[in-house]
Length: 90
Image: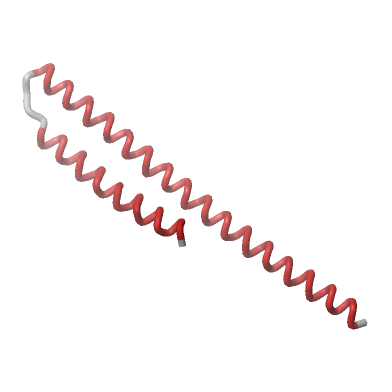
């Protein structure tokens, strides 16, 4: 009878470890997707800045305010990206 109790306990322990590891992998995947999403937002802002700069050049006008706003958005997203990266490394 003791043998079956040991088998039962070992199986339960292994099942718990598998479930725990699966939860960790799911959380890591969620964080990786959020990182990807933030990087995509940053790339879009870079493209918008480039477009604004070119349009300003073509029209002969100044766009420093628009560029500064976009750069602030990028700074905020970079902070979020750093936070997410830190979460992933824990």
